[in-house]
Length: 347
Ligand SMILES: [Zn+2]
Ligand SMILES: [Zn+2]
Image 1 (cartoon, rainbow, N blue to C red):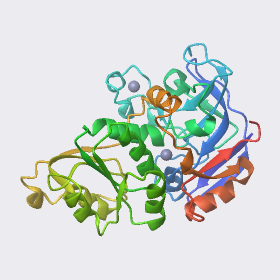
Image 2: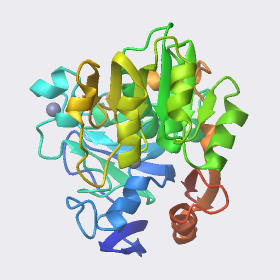
Image 3: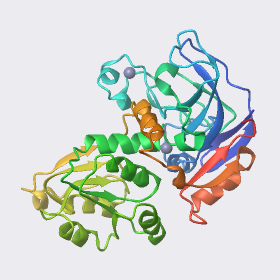
């Protein structure tokens, strides 16, 4: 089968590999119908994910059809259309029992697919702990609608969930890339009074204005002023920092009102500094980290009910055979690309 593979730093290639087989009673084999390229894949390519194992098939955001299951798998059956969770988790340990699956203590726990074990930019993928890692897609939800459930939507859903948003709030989202846009959709579920979105890219802000006309947009230069004037207490009640730049990290606390919640879900290239003397008395609550991706069933139900729709984010589609060209487009952000979907000819 074809599998897009991490060879060494700076080098991915489409190789012919053996089809994966069941290795454990809790495994499932999924025939991938649609996968996508994530910024984290580029981080692997550029060598900034030290845990990534050379030789693995990349790709951690995908949907498909169950081909085979181990004897301990009860959640799905062969023939089921499923989403694949970016995170592998045992469901049994202290952290899993609390819903903190990102810190599952299993050796394969956390982000393993397409990083430490073979992922889904391929024709087939083996999914460990399939009872936790796979969710059935409702009949009225298409593969394209479900494509981001396991990674981007899981992240946006988790970020909105932990941010304590109320209907009185003004919520500011820093960053309007794919994760920022999924976060925006999930923030909308809480019906806050105002939503502000900040990005430095005019094309991304234009996308926000076209698809979410009720959202107020700002640039890094104007966002402080916008947060002050558009909220009732001198700043945003909730700030979600998705962009991941030193500048946006500072804007996150500066744009917040006193006693606000600041949720930092971005991944930074280096350490960031909190100027605590300047912040003293502002009494902010910071929440940080990586997604606890265990709400895929709830997200699929919201998609089925029409309360989420991320299909406008898929701006380009390529067959797996042309994945090289898809990466080139995504990496260089050409042609207004937001997300690229990779489809398999076997579908
Ligand atoms: Zn990702
Ligand atoms: Zn666990």
